[in-house]
Amino acid sequence: MNLLEQKNSILVTDLAESLNVSSVTIRKDLTELERAKKLYRTHGKAILIDPYINNRNVSEKEKFFAREKELIGNCAASLITPKDSIIIASGTTLHALARCIHSTDKLTVITASLEVANTLSHDRNIDIIQLGGVLRHSSRSVVGKYAEQALNDFSCSKLFIGVDGIDLDFGITTTDMMEASLNRVMIQSAQKTIVLADSSKFGRRGFSKIADMEEVNHIITDSHISPLIAQQIEDMGIDLTIVEVPE
Image 1: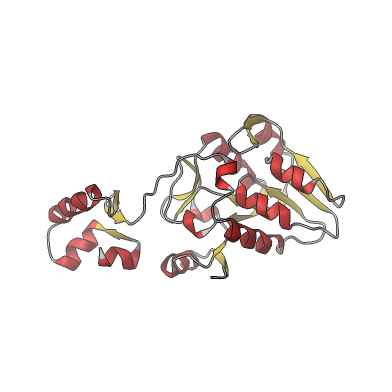
Image 2: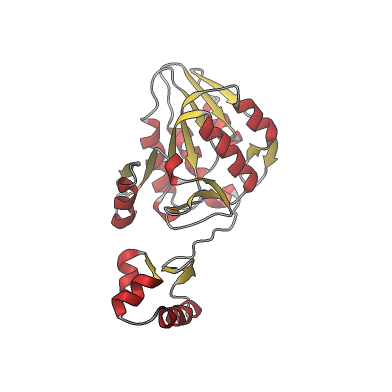
């Protein structure tokens, strides 16, 4: 447990070598610790937190990590340039981004989120392209082939995307497979993919994979991220911005 707390995750083979016992012994010990709800086992390794995420309604998600999302959204808004054309996906961190956008020049925004479109609609400098499709009530955003087809006609400088989980081995994920499919098309329609995620999202997995980490150009998160995970992200060649959260 001490080793796991230092590293967040650790391979069965590494534990066997460190403790000078067999892998069979390690697997039995991990099974006992998992039953005691002290860790979780996955694909030949142990991790500290439950990696699997349930879908929640957007109104419930808004309550969690509100300060972190506000700071992340403000940081992301600073990356928008004059006369920019961007895609904003769906999610509560993207709602925070929309509230931080105050354009003094022309800006074009394509979005799947009704909430984002409504927030930005009060700014006459912003041209909004609202994607159509099947409405997901839980996220108040659209998904489906009509939204995906519309994106084929556009090329934007940046995609701002929220995720339900970031597993550095598995990639970025969400809880809905139709949303994941739309997000993949969004990635293809943008020159740069910027992930906005509070620190609770790391080491977690949603049901549906959006993309491998190789598809991510930049991650913006908060200062509660594990230093080890932060270093691993930078070692992967991904730009990492950490916003300081006041204690």
